[in-house]
Length: 410
View (cartoon, rainbow, N blue to C red):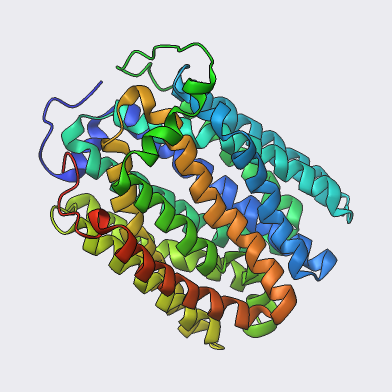
């Protein structure tokens, strides 16, 4: 049930019960997923002492997103998106249960851990496009910018809480971390399954090559959308340092799992602060400027983090990095979702998910490979420089995006 008053303070979007259920479910899933990531990262590095093994964690999670992109988008545009999200969250809960069993018995062969991460990647591959396409159907169009900002902010709170809780709980054993993740993902599944059927009636299209690739065709025909999601892909692919944080925590900053949890929370703290601000004061003008400013600052802070040997300075860099990323995410998500018709949102979101996954999980793999070759610190610094180069090239290559003033519906 949507709020009759489409306009007003941004927080009024939470008067919508279905959106509130969805936002809390996303929060719980974020906590659960982040606990899995921080727990697996520390456990794998502890038993392998290998940067490459950490990179393979990201690759295992990403490969299903890439492999299934055409199918997941079509499914999101053909079936009840809330039910898809709920079932997928339940599947991640099963993964968390499996990791709990493995770590209880101190399983040291990483092959089965990677297999479970692939299963988690499959669940995320189906959940992400359905989740992205669901939000515009839960709120009036005039409230969508606030919905994006608050939804992203709650996600970022989970990205703060998840690693922090995971780092603290790891002191009691990795099985405790994954057991807590199971509970969080189970709660997320129940909440998502309780969301009412969206207002939009989803028309099931026959499966054909044209319907499967429709999202790719749509994005290629819209330079602003293509530029926005490809900018995120290459900028974060090069500048991402998340997979190397276990190395920084143990070998550069000389801290423990609690320090790793703190580092993983840093970007989310900045993203949360910026997201809450955008929820009340959405960007109305100069959207392209804010997008490129966010990516540029992200690159600069990546370099700063790479060179830092002080935990407080590293945290400052990570907080600013997260706030900068949130700024660009807000512009990209609002632009992509509002300019895409509902019948196409799942397929466009699936392509967007591949780009985001490539920039994050594949970026983790890239960081692990480069770090194994030249060391963690040079890998992060070179990645930050690459992000600055990408921002400059994209500003020149996509003038429509650079000069974009207003976001649709804002």
